[in-house]
Length: 90
Image 1 (cartoon, rainbow, N blue to C red):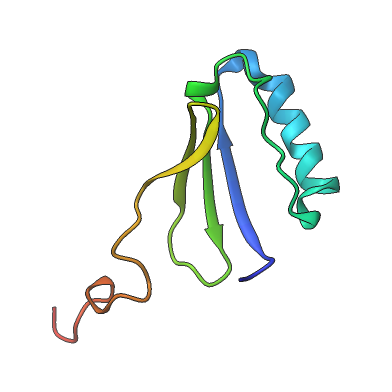
Image 2 (cartoon, one colour):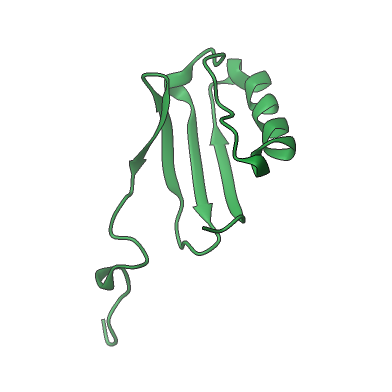
C-alpha cells in the first residue's frame, strides 16, 4: 500500500470548521493511520471524501453512512482489471 494519496473533500457549508479540522488531522495524524472521522459533522450524509492512491488512475468516492466511512463508487473495474484499459485500435 502506498503512503501517497490525493484527497478531495466535499461538505455542506455548515461543516467548514469540520473540514478544517479534517485538514489538520491529515497534516498531523493521518500518517499514523489513526481513525480521524467522528460523529461531530453537522451533516455527515453530505460528506464526500474522494481518494486516489499513488498507483490508482481515478478517485474512489467514500461517504459516511451509519457512522462509518464506506466506499460507494466506483469499485470496479479497477486498474488491475484487463477491461479497465482500452485495447489497441479502439
